[in-house]
Image (cartoon, rainbow, N blue to C red; front, side):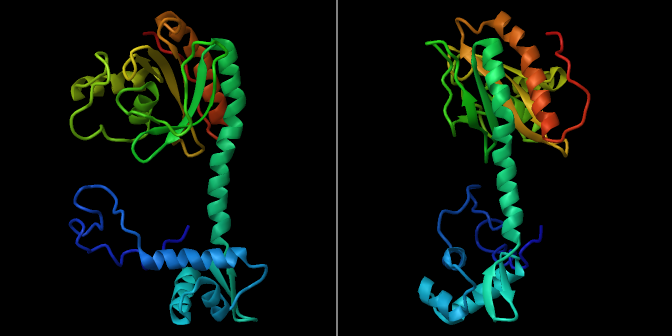
Length: 283
């Protein structure tokens, strides 16, 4: 996928040592007007039934024609907009197809994984979750709830705290993520709050191929999670099983490991991964 030739333009701004990132380490929250105008141009082309000329785009977006012309040249260079020589007009470009395929691939992940989540609920009786990598933590993108009235409740979009959940620890162990910066917050008296202890736990997770959570974020919630691999041998997702500590005790968690690994492996294969079948390690 091509990179925009102008992306370095603000790299030497006042944010932080030539990186374009504020000194706080957080992304800037101020909106960039030229980017907003570029979005308006894209929206105008998307809403049109046919190709549009510069003046028509300017009329629809209320952006002056000279600015529209420069925005179009930039968008054409990035492949997002295509110039039609025969008419001199513009239409959306082929790069949107590439970007759309990326989005569809992520949607397909949920489609592929959902039958396996249902099967895990059937075999374990507990809630099964599917998570993917977020900006900081893994984020729940799908789940199938336990049939029991008392259950581990999952929420779409909920982050799995990296050091305090089974899913989060899988992300740290297999996702190439560094340990969280600064002090590690204790959510319960079982949260791993020492960095040396967390490093040792992550090494153990890598050796056995899955992670436990014994009430480390919420006192009464236990969970076990395993990685799902993509076609490039990258961490594509994380499948987990969670339930109330009173029912999903250590024995039940251990019994859930085999079906969890089997379904994580099956989803990996459907995503194009090729490797040996994982075996549950003795603990």
